[in-house]
Amino acid sequence: MAGSTHTVTNQAPPLVGHDVFTGDRALTAAVERHLAPELREEALAELSGLGRSCGSLQAREWGEQANTNPPVLRTHDRYGHRVDEVDFHPAWHRLLGKGVAAGLTAAWTRPGGHVRRAAGFLMWTQVEAGNCCPLSMTHAAVPALRADPGLAAEWEPRLTSQVYDRELRPARLKAGALLGMGMTEKQGGSDVRANTTSARPLAEDGTYELTGHKWFCSAPMSDGFLVLARAPGGLTCFLVPRVLADGTRNVFLIQRLKDKLGNRSNASAEVEFDGTWARRVGEEGRGVPTIIDMVAATRVDCVLGSAGLMRQAVAQAVHHCGYREAFGAKLADQPLMRNVLADLAIESEAATTLALRLAAAQDAAGDGDERERALLRLAVPAAKYWVTKRCAPVVVEAAECLGGNGYVEESGMPRLVRESPLNSIWEGAGNVQALDVLRALGREPLAMDAYLAEVGLARGADHRLDAAIRGLLTELADLADAEGRARRLVERLALVLQGSLLVRYAPPEVADAFCAARLGGDGGAAFGTLPPTLDLASVVERARPGA
Image (cartoon, rainbow, N blue to C red):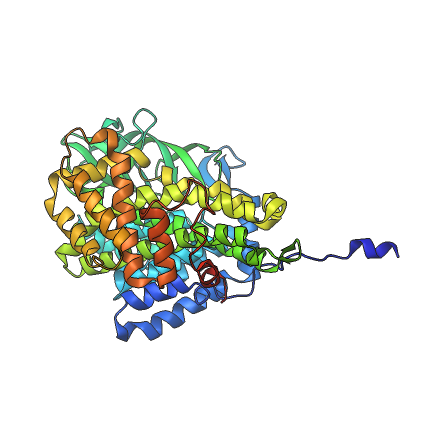
């Protein structure tokens, strides 16, 4: 009789054993839309395989283990020799190996590579976001290294390899390599032009000796790092290998690991250079222009990462509410909860749709499409600003849908909550993105032309979108003293672009809800304030994982 008190009822089963790709209708539709017909069959099968891995119990356990057992710094070995190594839990290596094998650093080597990788990266973030940092930096380093054809020829095959080799040894002996980066310093932060690390030329052409520090250096066990330092000709980009060609360790002194809010599985370090050997990338004094494409690529990954976190949070909320009952009915069937879930779902779909559109533009720009390249110049910082800022409120609201269960670590929601602000801060926080948009508007008229052409494709389809475009044009007509209203302007740019994409590509019920609440003013400041006359049940059903 006593055992009856331990009967468990009214609990949702774990969201495992499903295909994260095919169960995400917005994502699958975006991939099909942006890939050439001859690429679709292979790409869909590949992404479905990764989706099943993402939805597996094993992957979920790896993510939990990697975050429960964060990296540990070892500055010296048992004999007192300086080693500067970081030890990771085996789950970290399993995750990173799976990400590399899935092609998450290989976008540059195949047709449609950015769209295919973007879908995979969005899914893999849902498993464990920390290991996506070295994957992102390795992917983004490729365009920077192309400033030096010799370096690119040497390093690009390793960086785009689908082999994960964790051993510290000369990169020339490895089948695959990872790259990190160290740009910011304690006195400068986002103002990289304030960097003080110095670079002294050595006898061999293109080689230097670095002295200085970096305040944030993520993934310090990578095979090499792109860093900025002051050469005689000005701020310059350098490649710092972790191990030199003769097998000796480069001078790479890890002072400490950051104790971060989230992203616990990933090591972020403070490092010192003291006679550190480096190879110049690009010309002296051209450090910022050399890394600009790398920065753009990592910012796209911030959008993808936030879209992935939102999707996982919304999937968990819809899944939970589809099983949990209260007051005689499933939570998802109750009007107020349905409104909350639908509101979260349209935010998630808008983020996914925009993120994959950026990836498609990357593919087109790589093929020489200058209009798509111009669109990226404006759309990337605008999307990075807005999508990453929407991530935290979406994830927190989704956790609330689980009630007290969502506040418990076993649910996985607290880890998502801790991770949710990260992409808004990294790779240039909100103000940096807003100012970057203003620079694009002021200096690159082709970027605005490309943006207006893109959103104009949906003109006439929804009166609220049309009104929002007119309002945006009014704001853009006078950019004098625009800095104080830059965030407002960038928000409108992002929302109008999302609205245009959803009106063209999403089901009518999703586009209608987005335009009503985000562009038409018929929604409140909190989630769950959509007009009740909308088809919210269909919106929620579309967001159901595995549906």
